[in-house]
Length: 181
Image 1: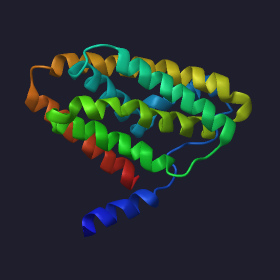
Image 2: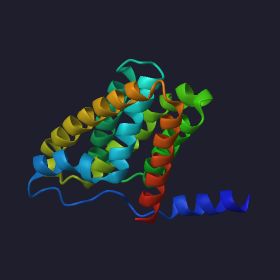
Image 3: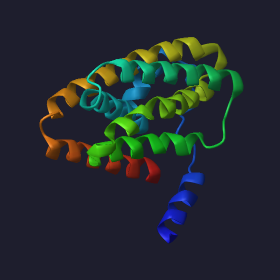
Image 4: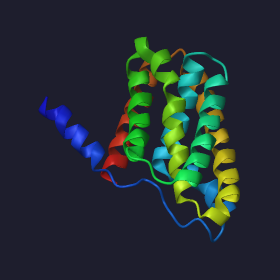
């Protein structure tokens, strides 16, 4: 009970994972952010892996990408939303749990587009209004490529449950790094 309460308090106290100031070179910044934002990178790779391990189609990555872009538009239009950072961290925990608990993979994988909405929302908030569309074009393009790369990795992991668990452990370790950072 005390550990659960401590985790909830940490999630509520998280600073924003967003990185404002993408107006100098918005397309460049958008292209690089999914690669340099650890939370974004891990969520996208994890979702791609889950898609390959569960449905074996690109429906989940495409839904995730659409939700991320939809969230960016909502963040651009409406600004910050309470709990955004906790949902971003939650996406890493859910992706890790799905890999570590194979019996729940499909159910947990289906939650990833919901979490992607909040990743996108953070990007919509952080992008300068005049740079929003260029920044979004960059981050959506690279996000799609990372989802495809994760899908390819997931195809390789299908027959190796030990490697699936190692990947899940890596996502869990990444979530801890994001939490500390």
